[in-house]
Image 1 (cartoon, rainbow, N blue to C red):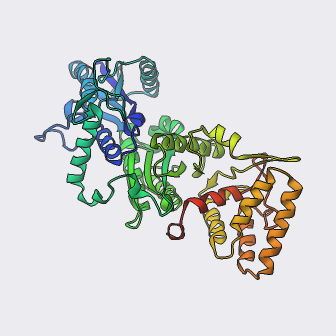
Image 2: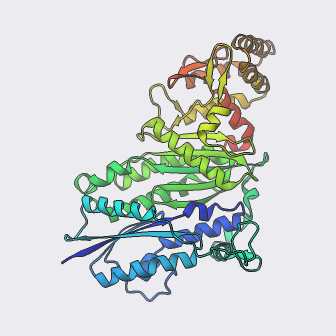
Image 3: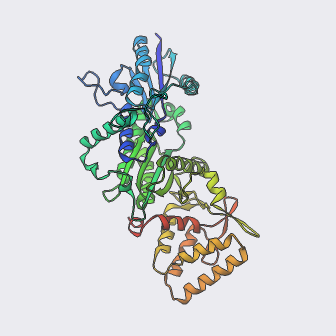
Length: 475
């Protein structure tokens, strides 16, 4: 008897959540997205169905995947499958203006889908994703528009999507009163008005999933549930009560959080470590990569999210998706650029003899030949944070490096001489910790060959020092 493999892909999640810098709307949008994969009730229980939860409103025989806007389910009944195809997009789009749904169905003969059938479903979903959809909040010239979103107003000077987000936020606060202290994004900023947006994504799932049954005796549905639980446990264990942090997307192996700039490195290192441990305990050890975008609290939030995602991809490419790593950047300009533009405009120094790159990462969770660990980076940063550190002079050294390699070296020699003459005990610690980054680094030599380019770690060190405070660094 034929069975029906149903797939749905929720599109526009990032834009829906991060369209605004207002924390209430971001949190509300995040809660709406979480509700799509929410299943608060067991089958057979009397329930008031979540208006956009797939499991609460339909009758799939098996849920294979339901996380991070990706749904796969198996229907034995053609009628039940047809009902889902007809009703689910309407439910989501009416309760989350701005989000659209792509759907596909593949007929299968066995009790469980094969990898070929899953691949066929993914292929059909990609085709559907490329087809344009008409948004429900389309406007015409007669309509009054919300100046913040350019969408038609419906009530209280709000467009439909904003009203939905605020309603979801109020419901969230009612259910989670301890989160009331975070009223807006400035609630997360440190004394330097800096926040961090962190995006984390697991490695190697594409290679792992086809071998789940053979190597790990796991069905895809069970794996999806275990992965989701491991990610949430890793998040909960990585934060503590002192941290100003909030998850925006947390499902599957996909994580996006906003936090104080002071907590970003500490939280990310702990999460990566916990994620490896939790997945190893649950099924098999997985690694993950992270991108951290430091920015001013008033910087357009969706740009920071976009950069964090790019940095995560850079980290993945650096480790070939085999190790837990992170990349970061402190956004100091007012305009948004791609990572490639940041490399070209801010992170490449060309003088009379050399081309020096300032992106010293990626930074690895564990020791690897020729690579720098997160722990060694933090230790080196703390040495430069201590009293008597020549950080202002090193900024001058970077500026001089643009002009002349020889003059920059002469300036560095003077910096080291002045620091030593003052009897600064921290000078030896800085020199020692630089060697943890690379044995060829020292107070006298701040440029080395790394990843096929001449690079210096000083820019990254200064980035963290300018974005964070002492208290967060030691947390």
